[in-house]
Length: 138
Length: 138
DNA sequence: ATCGGTGCAAATGATTTGCATAAGT
DNA sequence: ACTTATGCAAATCATTTGCACCGAT
Image 1 (cartoon, rainbow over the protein chains, first blue to last red):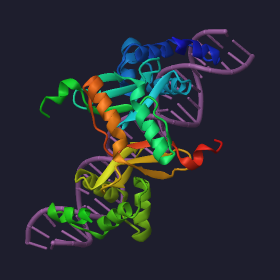
Image 2 (image 1 turned 60 degrees about the horizontal axis):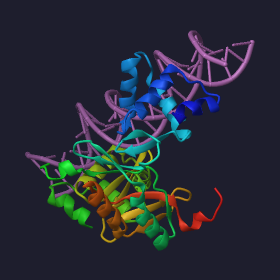
Image 3 (image 1 turned 45 degrees about the horizontal axis):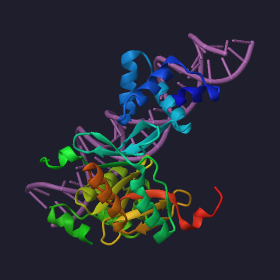
Image 4 (image 1 turned 180 degrees about the vertical axis):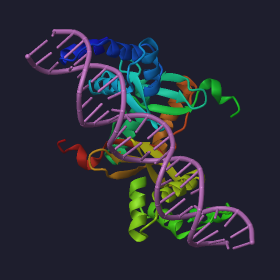
């Protein structure tokens, strides 16, 4: 719950709305779209406005409590806990699989050695087919 | 110029507007935003409408002549020629460096072996710091 | 009292779409 | 001629912003 602490440390307020948003993100290992988070929050507290959610997500992202990634035309959000820094999202069933951080090390090294380019692979979201969907048609 | 041929093969028309759009994309190794392409086209042929450009880009992408990637909140476009399948975009100076395709092989293998996940790394755009900018402040 | 937070409504900005007209083949 | 393409204007859709009011410290 470092998010909660963060608010106070920055002199920001820990409102019920913000608590809900933090809960939504910490309550799952999945990636959530802004819309899904809005839905979660509004289910438990009708009347909460989209802009409140967007503003809070921005605060959380700036504080490093939440990762924001672009997938397709929307942004998806995920908490920034230790131990699982990348994600595999199945483009068929939507399942999310956590992925170890070190899988990017070879490419990071290769790109640095070959091109002198320091790539930043932070919380990457890769799309493809998960184990279950690989065999299936479609 | 397989794009040009593609139009005819599909019974589509090769208009001056489309020719310009194809030229814009094939005339550079850089990634172009829709806006940049619109600018290129309108400079040489004022009056061409955005929607024409967007519609053509969509056709080209569907035909596999052009790659579309999301970077930040906009889409960027690049021709689909052989030999350079990934791109490194410097987040500081905007420079684009072509990147060999094989740098993704290790990660593709690792993710498949570890998680049974078949990731699709097609025409990836990675952001980071290029050789020139790595030393500089900022 | 003061500063930050919220809801609301309107603004943005990229992309898409409906439609009447223009132009390739 | 016949079908596709284009320009224009309006519609979307996710996200952002201005503003007056509300609430916690």
